[in-house]
Length: 458
Image 1: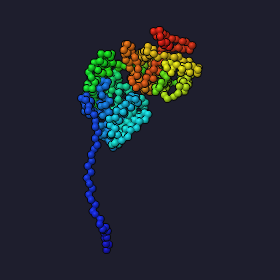
Image 2: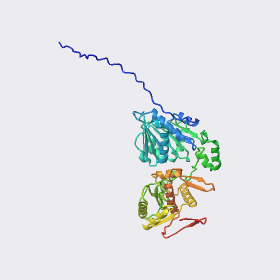
Image 3: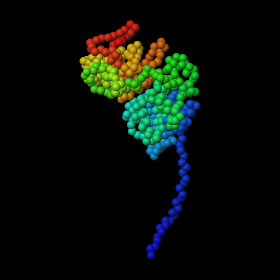
Image 4: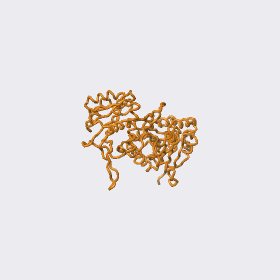
């Protein structure tokens, strides 16, 4: 017989029952939305398009949307929740990043800011990334549960169709598209879907600036009185115009072909906008004799259209290295360089000539800039030039380029505050050279600007 022996320990107390743990979810404090923002937040559509007038409050509304989504969804489909904020440029993404940090710092575990991407890790483990769509092909990768696309009218169609939209597929993610309109581009097409009652996944909203209680009506009235009617309609009423109230119309129609190597039977020209301070140097090379093919079969026709065959953009490189780079490009395409000679451009012009490169200065003053930009605007509107689809940054700069009226009534052209226009100026210089060729390298063409500034080579 086997006996059972139980060990006993003198003084041992029975194990007490485990205490009940009360689980409480931490809360974050969101903002107080105005009536228009509240309407946007109440929508449950998977894809929401908000067409807003300037200063309506779309950025603050979207920042609260993304914070609320991440806080309520630490996990998505069994994985750590990833949300994205996508903006046309790094600078615009950085502004939204700062707004989120300022409003929700107490709910954030860590934050990281690096060139090209900013990341927030929330205390519940979920992640929000802020990225630029300038080089959208580099964004391919992870699945995203929720996405805000900021000023999406200034982002090229291919970024949404080829990269951003597919990132929402395996996650069945949702997106909030916010923008002031820029003509009837792909954002307009998305907005129209939200107006279609058969598109149950989409809902669209239109919010003029005046619907914000924080913008005095007197300010709106002043803008209406002093701005061109199309600019006011687009920027303050959020109206989709047949052509954007910007400078360049027909940007998508100029997308064609690809970058190409030197064709010895063709003429080429180079436009160089030289970096100043934190700007970029941009070198644009046009094939002046490029043939563009239209139509197919019997309807196929060919037309000579200057085409962008090479495009370089760089910064933080010393001027001597930049000049050597441009000189090498000029030799490769056996052509001359038209460069912005304003400011630092004057000594750079002298340096370039020491390398034996034919080059000509273009002094960008008020009147000469008007002529330069208006010449490019006509070329783009009439599809008088073309550029490859890969020129995303160029297309975004063209789309956002704007004009204003000076107190004296003169038209002034510029990029939006905080943005760059280096690509625009470089292409404009190259196209000016294509339209006003100086194949005789010894030629000197100047014109007087009201008897004062010299404009060359007008």
